[in-house]
Image (cartoon, rainbow, N blue to C red; front, side, top):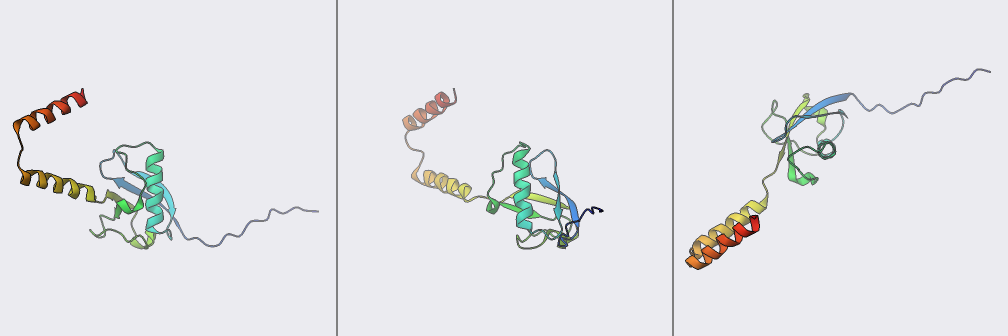
Length: 136
């Protein structure tokens, strides 16, 4: 009796691509293999996980909504998370962190402080001493 190896028939998944994602502010690109029919959101999630796993700097975080993926050779607009990664015909991408609303909150606080005035010199002196002690 002959034994045959049976191959599992897998559904056709499309071609695999080796993509390179450059993170702004990082030393080098992240490279990994993805299916060309993979959604941009899934690729972005994988890139953030690989970035964190490799212990790269600067630390980015893991919230998908805080980041945008660009294709610098095709268009200057960010990629929609619902498009497939293979639809662009390129393999190099750029990952950028979206500007956060925290910066606008800090700017508002600074504007409010400027409107109120500098205050007394004693308040300024005490504030500057507390900064020096805290950093000591």
